[in-house]
Image 1 (tube, rainbow, N blue to C red):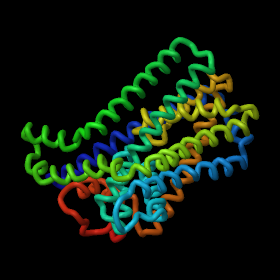
Image 2 (spheres, helix red, strand yellow):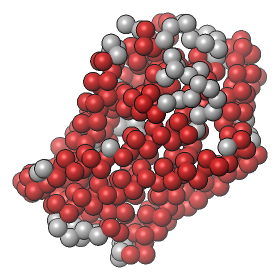
Image 3 (tube, rainbow, N blue to C red):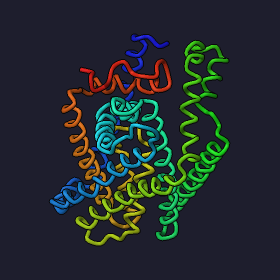
Image 4 (cartoon, one colour):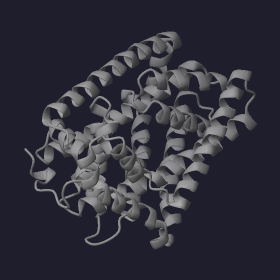
Length: 364
């Protein structure tokens, strides 16, 4: 087992790495704003004005559909209520935004926040299943966006190569995922067995392997038990991406007055790529400005439009993060509470006990 000192050391390393990435991102953020013309960007933001409220309204679709999809992936009684899932989703995303390398604790935190409502293993496995559906929808969205980019806009050789590489990568990932699910390859338990054979943490593996197998059975068995839910869940995940496209369209409409739905579709698919590749960078500082500015320049909207779009996204994220923080405070919790508890949730879900002795909502 990992002792408290080791956990603290690991936490410190994660925090240090996160701070380094945040600092590099901040420097890139300043650089790309300067390169794209701060005056033009400020002019774009002023043109958006009250339109930002419309952006916020459109973006509210995202947490709603993801939380609802989570409830649709849940099996058993008592049912996971939308209200509980929605609150947990907002708080988990807020933690992921505010904590360095928050991706490590964001999803476990969501499962931890509903464990006083539903069994932890059931809630965590439902969340894992929802993330699989989301990942599939992201892959399909990136694939279709890349195809649209290649067929609809004249691209220079480097961008053609990048687009082809993205298509090949998505195809391979989808094929691999289908192969894993179809053959029910037990990757997690297999990795644990390999670690055990190598002589590492053998007692931990022996104590937890059956629980990992149970977790995998829940995930792999979902399709066979709930085929009628598959299409509705995928439609919910599609609404998440549609919201992103409408958001891009709205911003471009206010600052340029001449967008097309196809342009917004391509821009949002590029944003999905940035989110996937640079998930570890807080707020995608710098990289979002670079990617969005580059692609809007290719689409002849100007680099400043793309950088403005990236800045508006960050403002939207911070607004929803504020909502998550308010919900966190209303529960009497702090970021430290949820990060420490979220960090141990996955181990608890598949590990040492079937039930948590202390509810996250009781942690002070």
